[in-house]
Image 1 (cartoon, each protein chain N blue to C red):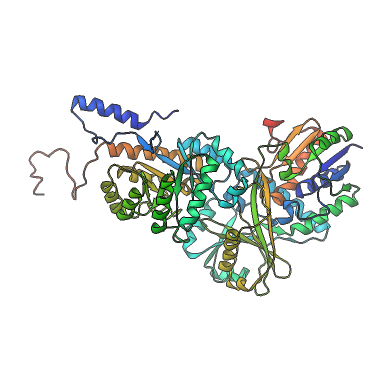
Image 2 (cartoon, helix red, strand yellow):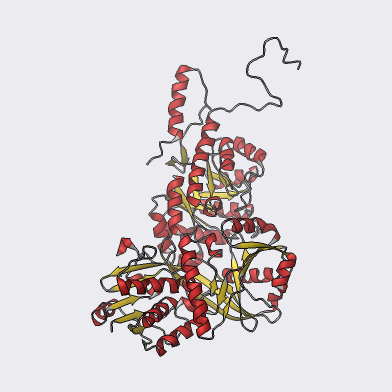
Length: 289
Length: 340
């Protein structure tokens, strides 16, 4: 695997820097990404819908270096095993498959779909979506908590697609989720992080939980911003699938996410309200000018 | 006279048969259908000849094949008194999805922007849209009339058509000994020989709506379900089509119908009063790159994977197949070297 990750490099750098005591990186944040005990190197989770062709999808997966791909399970196709061929194709990518319950509007529907997905893909992982509004595709957080509770009890490893509401996040953790996936913006909107302040609070409020920005990302810079806020990973689909060149865009996201993560670990400077000259100019009382 | 057996009577098989007959071959068509019927996905096609619009998601080869096929259809339609409507096609989006329209124009060529007044001039019943993309050089035809006409043209050119015969693999093997060439144009049924062929389910409707008049296909962009409407004679409209990664299914889902009908309603609320004439479901045969492929095995050529580009690609692919049979000349674009 060519993921000689920044992560590993950072860890090495961190150890080295500690010894020298010269430069600093964020304490304790260099730990590897882990979802339900599964260690991962790539911090990009990629959706598999809407690509021009399966071939383009497979190339995009490769260039993105992702290790987790999400797959939508329609109950219709699940029951008849008819979607098998497309899923076989996805298995060729050697990525871990995270089935999702896209398009489910009630806890009951989502639970049924999750059961089906567990059988089809032989995995307890499920990306849980309970959609509250068909137009904005925003989560129905009440149905989400209800479905998460039931699924966690049944041994599922739940990845809930949620809002940036802290209390909902708490309830999902209480239900047994170990990962939270707040949205950046409505699904497919490509608007980036609509409420960075709330997402920042979310990160601080759940310091030890794996947090993934799920949905709304349109540009690599937005994914980098999420990583700079300290999020553990980013999940996206449309931004790559519908780009003019999905394969090149997949690579761009990989680079941006690595850049954002490195920046977060490197203790960025605090912004100030005014410019600060890096060296005082002799004879000029700069604090008066 | 060299003989060729064509298996399958969809637009791929009939286009090949038609070209072969023109080139002087003795042609046998063997088909599971009884007549041009709903057993092949050509029956359910939209019949849009939209090589420019397709560039939004298809490889450049589709445009090349499409432009060549359009010239063929135009001539064929003129010779057989068929409707070939060269009025272009329109692409519109809801006010809040204008970004999709801009993106569509960036990913395609050959379109001009129309404002509200120009749209009303072309299609009065779409007058509520403020902007549209007009692909002036596109066209549409009526797939069922075309398939029937091709079928009859092959018959009158001397082809024998053996109907209601679904061949087993051993029968196909036997056929190779009886004729000079076998063309396997069975669409998705050929998965028995080509495991990398997959089905992409499509659902469509025919609506009768006396209140709406349209003269050209219209695409309505949407972030999740882009849908098109193709006018047929007598205020009938073909509304299509879903694209699901499902190998086969004979039933339409409520969800798909909701998506399709909502789109029609968004194009013009008068569609709420339309009558549903027919609901159609089938699966398009496709390879991983969604491009047509010709594979050569001994004296058997398989012609498949036309995906959603049956009418757009079939004549151009058929011409390349006949060139190969005539002269042994391989056309790299469609011949699949990995499997030949």
